[in-house]
Length: 293
Image 1 (tube, rainbow, N blue to C red):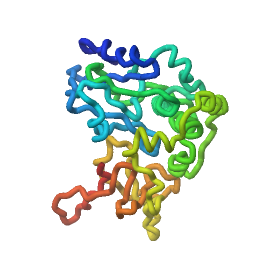
Image 2 (image 1 turned 90 degrees about the vertical axis):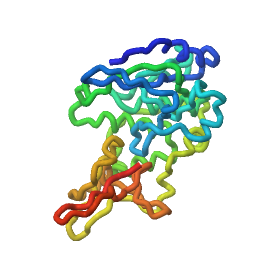
Image 3 (image 1 turned 120 degrees about the horizontal axis):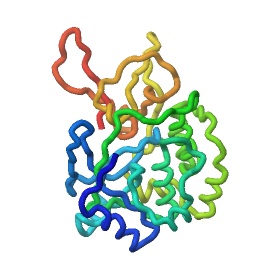
């Protein structure tokens, strides 16, 4: 469910009127799902979209370089990715740039696919600070998933195969290169050639230079207690980053048990590090180790 605020449309359309290859997202305000209270986001608390190497969308603070580039706080903000679902795009540009990937199923991955394609193929993706749309975020998925098919993974593999170039290995190593059946992506690769799109390295260097590159890690894999065959296990969902990691039977499938050791000695998961949560140790209770941004 979405609810538009007063004056939401004009600032959403203005950048497109100036340049049809600009795609614009509004500021997504949160509507409380129990009280329907509308929480209006301040201009000073803007975020931009990003992604992690599980190919999941996440939010980031506006980088200092983007703050300096903008001449006024009401100017559009360049964003590396968008959440999807709430955006304005020229119909002509939407069709010229390849619409959606018809090989994807149901939900998941389409927002990153479109974000990468926009930036790498000559477009621009921005957030309009003066356009606000409220959204009720669901606590659970309303979709009926296909039995025996990991739809989100299938869609993400399609994104990686077409757009990530040599960087796709950082996603694939999370599940030991078990790609599964992701369908035929030849038409999407032909589209990329036709549009004369730039490389994913160009995207990382110029659009999302803040992104942590797993190739900078000195080691990666699971953290294993060889004697007990238990591994450090923690949710990959950013919403659960502050929850303690646990010891769980090693499954050698990556995912929740995949971590990296950085050159600085950090045990990382993309933009999060294993850290002690603080507090006084109590006899009989375990100190809590969490993934901390």
